Length: 266
Image (tube, rainbow, N blue to C red; front, top):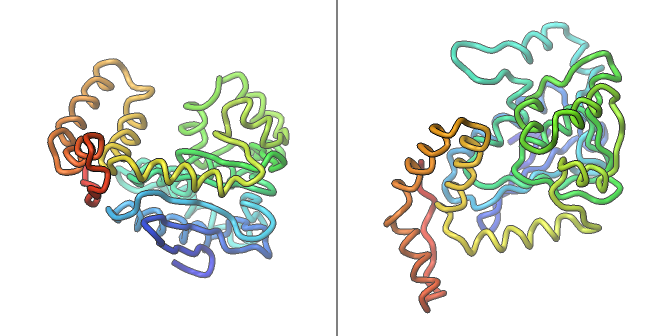
């Protein structure tokens, strides 16, 4: 996509790599633009079965590159401006848009995952981390609040008191402790290998069912009963009896070689 973010698609897996290792993958304006463009592209790609989101070099992402972004005061206006009926602004898009990618997104973290980097990882569906990776909702250290979609993504993962505690103190915690509070999905000495093993498991399932589950839980998890139940019915009508659902039945009825087709658009 650019020199800031690379995108490679291999064997139906999209590899998205933050590629600014000399700056610890700090988020400058070019990185914001590249990440949002990549997410928008993958949202339309029905062939992708999973997305691996990772950082090149020593860390996943150190957060906002304050020096670079603040060099031009207009940049903050660009990040926080929201036009028309859009849900999110550019700053929030970096995390939020991964929720709109139908394929499951797995953030593989190492080194540090601070501030905006953490909010980027929280936008993924799953987080696989090394035990010693450092996590922090770091904005309070600089007299700020998190503003890159954390209030949407973190509220699904942990109790409000724990979230407040980490946000107000900017405390740094390990991957093990992050998993303990629900911020991280799995901890492993080899998180990429663990993530790819999970992807292999996902690829054995219908891409419609996997994408349908992602959409269902994102839309219904914190919704009122009527909205949640409506989403169940709405999505099931789009899946049941279709080609990939019939293939799933066949694969569980003695025809494991039958291949799934590309994912449906919901």
